[in-house]
Length: 82
Image (tube, rainbow, N blue to C red):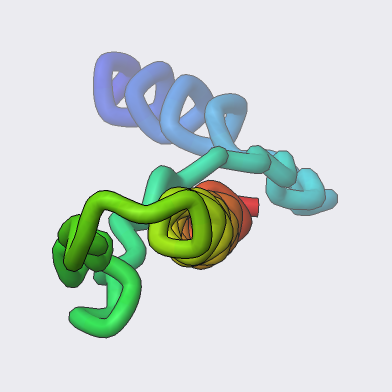
């Protein structure tokens, strides 16, 4: 009988009367963002069409425009992760 009373007192001593608030834990989750297909297409390769000064200017301007578009695609890809 005495052991039962001691066991009962120990069991009741382990119970709390006021519950504790749960601890809030913040977890950072990495998420892979799919890259749209239009941003991963190959950049345009502008071919030479002749051997004149006018063609050299056209080719330089066309390649510059192609480079700008390619860099804009890459900037959009970098922006996807932000």
